[in-house]
Image (cartoon, rainbow, N blue to C red; front, side, top):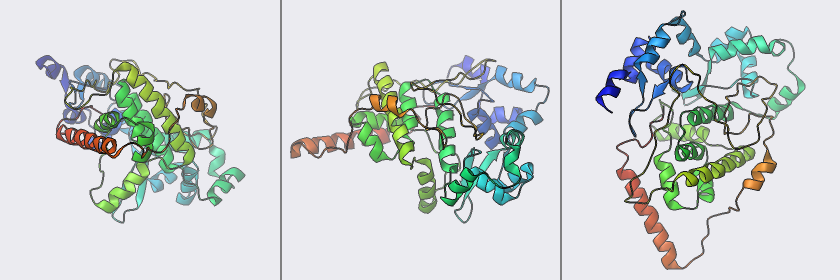
Length: 355
């Protein structure tokens, strides 16, 4: 970071203080694009331009308006906003009518989902028929099938925010790969150097990631796609993202300098751009699920993915081959071990400045 950049930008902590936001509120505002951050160097933490702070402070509803747009509510408070019992709100979110913005684990390791208060209020205005009377038949059938769309909708929102934060093709591929189990990643990404590079660019877990093994197991499970159609969608998205990344530049091998462009966020007064995936457009469902445009993620429950085009672009991938001579397999293991060691040695500095 140059002296001029330091004079024109401030740290996230200072920006949160000047915008009268708590750290968690500021982090969410940056992820949602309400506060635009800028990269100031490869792997360095993102900062906020002084002009951006002045713009936000000049708003007529500052600071209450900005704070309200990032206000989170749990199940009970959200139900109170809708004037419905908490169990009815739970049934609505389990069937995908609202998307969580984040989650945490309480002392009993139970998952607590949080929602944006503004989206809850908008849902009440858009779908008043779902707030009273008997739920529609399709909703009741999905509840009888023990459906829970909250993890999937949270993953879709998180991936959309990650993709919007960067224009680097390898970082975008890493964001998609973070939604898949390592076995699926290995089946799509056969090159061990590419897998190591994607691992270096992997977005960090959401703040508050638990440290205990049992709690980490729960959060790791929620972070990975589990439904077959969701896994298939992410595999196709990773295949297309890798094609774009390879055309941009090859993955670095051990000993080579990694040419990593830090994720970029929109600057100025213009709204964040929409980054459309190389897929057929998917129309939003009529259920009122909040959809973030530019979503390279599976559509919410009930929306059919464009399988025909995805299947045409899908390469022939299968389980990793066990063939080859013992010497070849030994060499492959040594290369993977060397790549992993080089990756661990470079983790002191984050290769990509995710928001």
